[in-house]
Length: 67
Image (cartoon, rainbow, N blue to C red; front, side):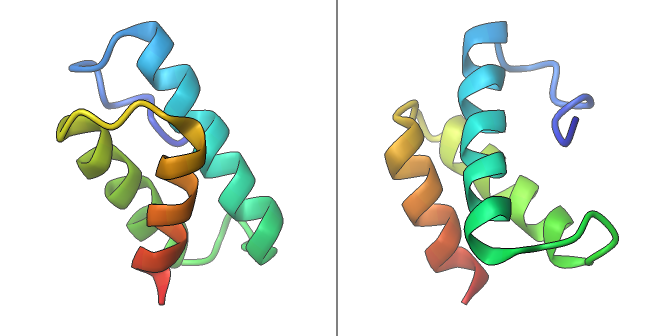
């Protein structure tokens, strides 16, 4: 689970963050040993910290952050 150390978020938000993370990984084909996975998790966490909770928006913004 990419967000196990993000205790500042409630369980519902963590589920949405994980769904967005999984969607980006599936769309990009990132492997778990790729250093970009850490950047991806950090980007999604930053978006969630700013208040974003929509999985689709988290996914799209995270994809943009990887470019």
